[in-house]
Image (tube, rainbow, N blue to C red):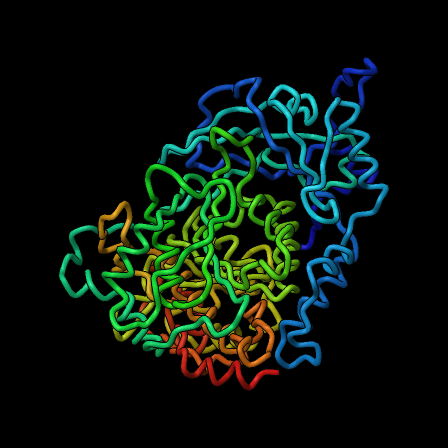
Length: 559
């Protein structure tokens, strides 16, 4: 789509939109407002269960419009493309925030608006491109002309306080991309557990060893490079227990000469009474492949007894912005994906900018592509977000040895973002030469194709609450596995005085022959099914699964 984030309305559209007329409490006059994120809707899995408590506390984040975004994007592409003169010349966090700092007048307008409602905003990022405001539900409703409700997720016990619409005065709407938590719902993802299908000793003991052999990692261990870190993210009540990782290590790591890592925990949603299978899966497998490298678990609960309710995904990006170059992990693996339209265009476009801010610093962001195949809604495939963002690396799924595409793995073509320059040839080859493609009425053949790479996504052994659970499946297995291998590649480069790999996709497509090409299998979808795997890139397995030995040679050739 070509429309920009935020709420710039022309005079004509202003009248067409019939702006909400709302009483301005302090002056007793009616002032027009502009509805923000008008395309938002409540995803099917969330049900409204009643009005929110008036005194419940929210941490509102105002995403303030940034400047020099064309320049940011140009730098992002230049430092990420191995064929560019500027490859690897990443910017410092300080420089990134200087470059795109909001205009002083924008901040003045927002702070004036907050003050008129007896609220105070504080900088949530170094340059104030996110402003944090603590408010009760009652205050937030007046501020945003909104009505907050408690919603419950039907497949889990998660609850979230959200509104179904909100609006701002025109002069404030003009300087803000969006406010959260409002209409976007928090990420919920649960790996599939197929108990009973693989309860044999072979599966129980050597998941990690098998993956290391399959991806040519062998007994290689990282840790040569000081300051190299990898991290996984967890949202809502996805807790991690160090004892589980230790037990997993004893069961799975065999001859690999690396100690079970001491994982640093960052965020507000890290520890809890019960460990989540998702959290344990992520931290166990990023370490199984990326052994020897400093590891972190970044957990954001969205709501907890000691914290004001917030938008956990945004909170993660905010903390990345606030973490120094010396301390920030160089790889983040995130196992969360949902249909593209569950996030409004305004939130998605601004989130893409936050992804670019990470990429220009040399940070790699990998996202599981999702577990809904090609998806199907209203007789159309459903592309996923954030794996389909043009500024991250999407990770699809395979199964078995020899590997083939797994039906659950999400992949396809985005409706919002066009095919990207670094993948144009690969996508065009697939569309013109792959056999047995689905009918083109199901998908947007000009869209950004995803995923970019893949890894095993079935039969994982996960230790959670000290219980080994075999048969765990989903692309949430694939993302940490691939991320661990990439973390080893960073280690190899950094120990030779080179830079981190940063945004990976231009490198991936230029070095597709360093991946194991997957040519069998297909994902599920409408009608006859989704997309078939094929020679070269395909929208189920990307360019393939990592071959560490080949990739190591390729990254050492780069400057």
